[in-house]
Amino acid sequence: MSDVVDSILRLVRAESIDVDALESTLDESTHEERLEAVRLFGSSIQSRLYRGVEGCEFSIDALVPPETPSMTEVVHEGQNTLPVFSTFQKRFCRPDMEHLSDEERDVLWGYNEQTLKWFTGPGYFVAYDDATTGEVCIDYRETPEAIPDDWPAVSPNDRGLSRFVYAGTVDRLRRVSRHVSIGRAYRDDEEALENWFTLLRRPSEEMDETS
Image (cartoon, rainbow, N blue to C red):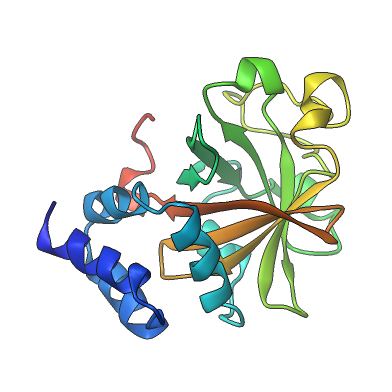
């Protein structure tokens, strides 16, 4: 373990998380160092971190930078608090102009890339800003109108086995640093679930790498 990763872990394990110091350390780290650290974030760290960054302003522009061409995939490495199958990816894109003109809000489209995708479905969602809380909502009650050519076919989240995982779920994301965000799952955007996850965006120069 490098000194940088050790520093990140010490910050998130502290009795009181110094949010500014954590943000600075993460921003100054390499992608590999951030990923190594995030993979070690267990449920205790993630739940405390989620509470610790409450009120930190966040928007979909941090998930997919505004200069990203429409329908271009941006990958976020994910680490959740489940006992198994805890690593995954959320893949986002900006809508094309044809569909963007139909939206009354700025949105991203996306899905979950993970080992059990064949069983649970891709878990498509629509992401948008919540101006009231400063969070980003990942809403599984909505699905994209179009997708990049190489994404799996869109399937509703309230059918088949998908309904046991995604139906009625809204994830709420909060900012940790430039590349890192922390989320918690809610049922129908009201009932908080004991499920947290951390996302790490790949830097722009790595967007074309395969997962």
